[in-house]
Image (cartoon, rainbow, N blue to C red; front, side):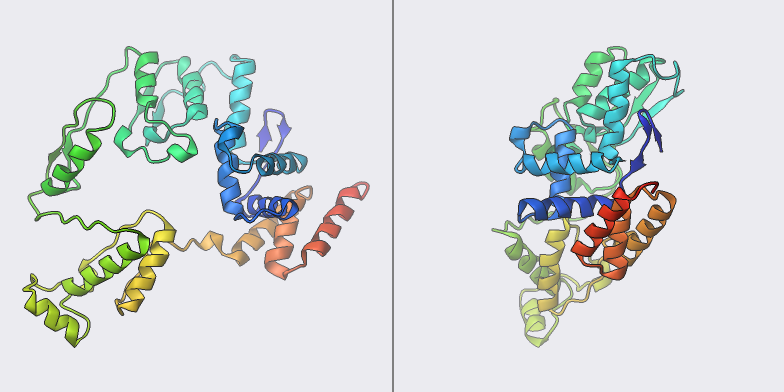
Length: 332
């Protein structure tokens, strides 16, 4: 990438995790590298140091990233924003004919400022979003961005979509009283689908009890896995049994999935997890990607370190010695 301050390299996921691991080892913190990267992202997107759990680790990570002349995705936005704030005329007068933004409720302060700069030249801005679906406040998103947008663009025309094509009337009747407590006035939604049956609410004390309840519920829905379960289902006069292929469990985080899987396995319930494994996250794939990254960018010693670790199981001390040697080698 050719950045605003010269040539820069975008840090890949494997490189960022490796640098985060080095920082955690240096500071002796019992924290996962991904958790540290989340904190760094929060800091770069407007959270104060007081709101961070490990501000020193965040600072050290950023220092090492800069030392290696690497940028992450947050840095890309921040670099462009700094350039606009330094000189708003540094970019073409009309860089975009139209700006279309999806999932606008996830917009944070940095992104909102960039949108304002980009749309200032021609005023053609179109956003789609739902403030009631704003669930990334821990990353800096703020559903108040809709109100700010209306205030800064008084000529903005708002179109409200009231017909829901996904959920049944019963689900909407449960959801509307909940989201109506959010700021922004009364919610109005109409279901396109016909009635599908009552919604059942099962309160659970924790994640484990939730997993057990779900497994037991599935057991009853299919008519029981073993003889005792089957007799119990007949005695309770359950509705017509369903096939496993007709049942789906929606969960929010992979941590929830781990508990659910344990409970399903305990009940001998077959299942398939969809959308969890990412081929590009496999160690061999990440290592090979970093190998080619190092070949194309010999200055990227972090990519070399990740490659040595993931492909060749190179010890940390040997890898660091090699990096120091290459860094000090004249003409490298």
